[in-house]
Length: 142
Image (cartoon, rainbow, N blue to C red):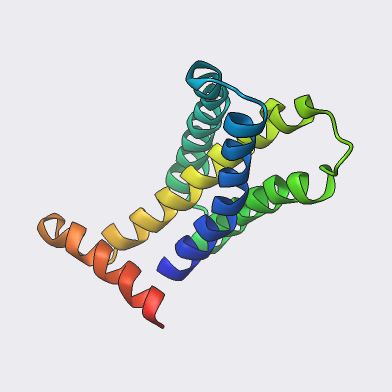
């Protein structure tokens, strides 16, 4: 499961860095404007938490289903940047709320599923941070 987590955030990181760099350096957005964009991500996080609670916790959906949904959201986010944007696109097209919302929802869904899988493996809370670190390092080395 740690490998999926690593792959997910590696895929998302490229576009997120591009998005932030473009807004700050090319468009000249100040910190206030960049923070305002994060409200859409925050709304996606809230929606992702609610969705995960009702489907994963209450309806008992499987880990594979939830991971597939999170990766589906990541694919939508990446597809927006790879297929919609070209050299002639208007700058406002980069900062529509939907892709930012989708990124937040997908990130929180995969995080909740990953952390739940670690906790349900019977690991005591006292060693949870070390196990989390060890799991991520092990997956990176393999």
